[in-house]
Image (cartoon, rainbow, N blue to C red):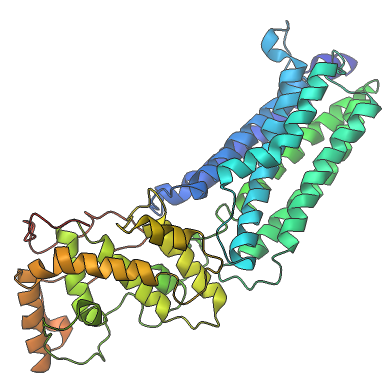
Length: 463
């Protein structure tokens, strides 16, 4: 026991290493499961790379604990086994610090969007380094002072501030999450976040206790062996709790990830329970469409909007019509239902407005900035100016070609059949299903198969 306590390679060490490897494999499976099984498209921005950073940080912290606490028996020591590389930088800012910074950033997003009702003032890729900065400074000081022993242990006067730094980040996460406790979320983000914090806090308390015992009482062999076993096992539980129990994307736009849902939602409108979202309304009047009517008025007719959308998609210019459709869905939500309006508004911004969005629309810089810098995501006229620009664009580029297309002729034929008593289900050869939104499926403008593969659009069609 005394020999392996110093040099590593105890049976409990290998057991702990096995547990950590299994935990990390589970973490990887958990992270890629939605993309492999549910075929969920990869999101852009922080919704994708923050979970990726968490996976990387989880790997670093587990590897660092193994390397700095001599879990594996090495005959010789090399430069890459440096205590300061693993015990200071790996376990500190690049491991535990980075993991906590990601969770604080996600809680910060929840707070700003649902409490302040605006997009965060600081982008996530700036906020994470900012939160991590105190930890980097602390690691740099330790590296300069070099207080570690040849067994990578610190004295009491260095262990106490390091533990306080751990506690400060946990307290910050709890504080930011507590600030949004009064919001009644639609998809249980806060409950999942609290559950993750609870499990993680218990793990952290036990982990810190083992850490202190391991650092200070390095002359007691059995305590060294048992404390480092707990260090690695509790760290394995911690990384799983942080990633899997807490929601990996607080602003959920992929509702189909929820196993407990009895159905899959094709659009955000359906996920939010907006009436008649994504379906053709049979109660709409069966009347012929007059091309002389204003386009924005015609688009309020669901059947016409689906036909016009199919034509626009065939021209690879359907973003504008889909944007109109989802803003129309937003208008059905009561102005007093702020939470659902914020969900829908945020979804529209991520899908159509943000730079590099999957279906980014062509609007002026002024209108885009008005939306992105809004002080109230729930306000009724948030997309008013953008919608006016899009309607004008559709009038110039799509409408004049639509009236002479087979899509319009087919729509008129079906309208006549409905007026004569035929049901829509009896009509074959036409697909009225809406494009899959980013809730489930792909945001690919080439997704739908249309009746006419050859474009009937004019050469000036451009969205």
